[in-house]
Length: 174
Image (cartoon, rainbow, N blue to C red):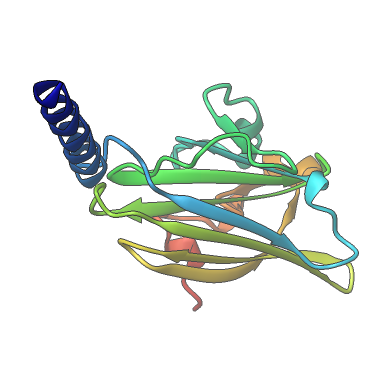
């Protein structure tokens, strides 16, 4: 009986240590996210997708044709966010009429990120106030774009004024 207790204790210690190790190396993802909206907006009107959206696309309309994106929020949390080393792209839609897309570049996949998606309306314009705390901190406030005009935009910027775009540079104020 004593031997069985010792074996069970060793198994529990081994499983606990294994879990902590897998979490440390990034196999078990501990990322957290929060979605906040200010009245009169409703959380149920927002959808947040994660995927890979090339910046070499012709225009932003291609974002909506991309079937490889994963829906992780549609008014409620559906999945965890898994941020990998490198490019992590997000597409947010509001009532299937407005959108905003951004890229978060992560240099250490083992670190846990905390993402805060906050949305508010000012006059007739919808804004995202994005804060990412973790490996590579990122904060910005940007307005949404109309989906019906997405064929005229690339990475949230008019197609004819884009020139060269690099990861996330569209978020830097000029």
